[in-house]
Image (cartoon, rainbow, N blue to C red; front, side):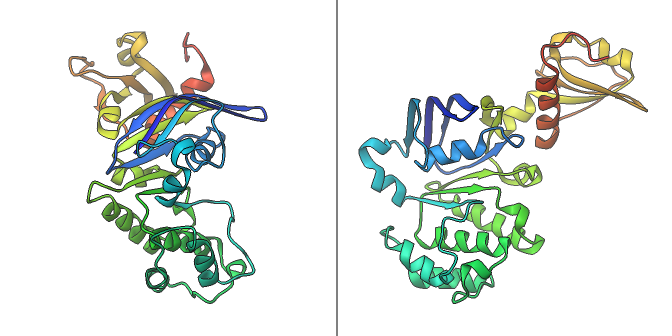
Length: 289
């Protein structure tokens, strides 16, 4: 669905550089990283709101230079920015911008508004942040895109709608022809449904992999300091000391051995992100004591 080859973009003092990955069709990609990592910049590149300075970007095998209208017709999005008209109603906005999409269906939009408990004749500017995001989601679904791009939407949803939202996007990719890119700080959502993970930090790509392979390549180990020190230093990504010993993220392979006194388990996405960013802040490892 998305192919990037050494894509770079500079905006002010920030540079997104050498982003390279192939995200296949029919899956959910979780985009993670702290604030300022480059997630929104990358989304804007995929949406063609920004233009790459270097590298190649393909959407569903096509370049924007050759098929911009066709590509944009197949993308739906939910962004934190207000790109719609605040003084117009939800339905007026949908009808106005729906003209740019071949498959826009007014009845489908109204049906989603009803499902999401939105008043279609209410002015967008009178809606809450969560309602505005629900509107964008309803509009995106109303024109039947092949790719949904979602930038931090779930933090503003109530728990009941968040569960419904996650169910909808899971169903969206079920036929193998549709794809989702979900940038979020709520990594528990990605633990539940992401098939692939793209991990960015300070404009650089740290990891791109299917979720299972990525998490399987690390372990969280907990125990006494001397037990952790028995591990080869190059395997320790980051460790921290606490009242009850040491906890560390370590690189893992199937043949790796651990001291019998260590508690060893696979990390979740939040732990992988936390310890990796700690290691990045620390710089080249000498000692973390």
